[in-house]
Image (cartoon, rainbow, N blue to C red; front, top):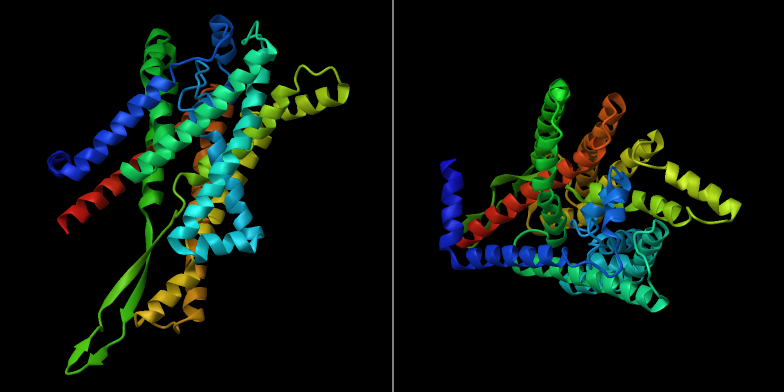
Length: 423
């Protein structure tokens, strides 16, 4: 605890750290203000009825940072940007030119790659915005809108999504931690007061055993996420001795810390982004008069958070995205080349290609553990929902995973900033 207060004091006494923290707080205040500005033509009573116990729109509300609950100008949130990032990173595997830009052209290549992701966000936001507005109009939530009003609403929500993407990148550049993750985190935290007040007003003494069970499960989930996120597999590294003039250099030993979960919270966000699309399309086709489209709509809507198929796909996607994101962001071959250039080697392993193969095997094994655990934690609330019948659990498990991972990442970024200051 003493160390914690010392860090808080150091943050506020250091000019650079204080500016970064204040910038993040200022941006989050602006973000929350934007989430309260609604688009025109809303029937508030119908909206409240529609959103009650609607898990699909509850998850969409996470990505909008709480903007969807009152149909604000940022109702799309960072969802389109996340989807474009997924598509671009998938294309790095299939398109050699993109892979070269991302991996071989350094910082300039990363900037070009990110610019492509931003440009792709615009059409994705337009498609998602049109779909959501059409769904809301079919539900009589948006009323008395002319064609011109519909076009204006679409332009406004697309612009809101682009604005939120820009705000997230500003936080990443001038603040602390990942801006997109912090926006999602802020939206979740902003809902806590209303959730707590609703729980107090609807409290029933007979539910105490179930509440205690949920508290224990929540603590175990938090502890598990922290444990897996912080777990590392050290690979020993020895530096060869080198003689320069009359002096000897090197000869020391250290280790490479390979994290069990290299991807952090990204697989959860990616998986949810993919799983939302079938339900968006299903809801969009719900009022169709064509029998084939109606059948497709019923099939897609049935793919909801309460279905077994959803849980299976959720686990598989989280598992695969953990491996995928680790493969994209961590390059064993480049690491082995750097070790060889610096006269370092793994004891018992030949430098070069053999070292790359060895690191890949170790990384694959520990990622298997991390991906399996993360997938299990993701669907555990769905399993408990099946047992208890309480529908809000699936959403709660997802939010716990995101909040814990974002907080851990934020703490690490703050520690890194403090360490840089000391140097």
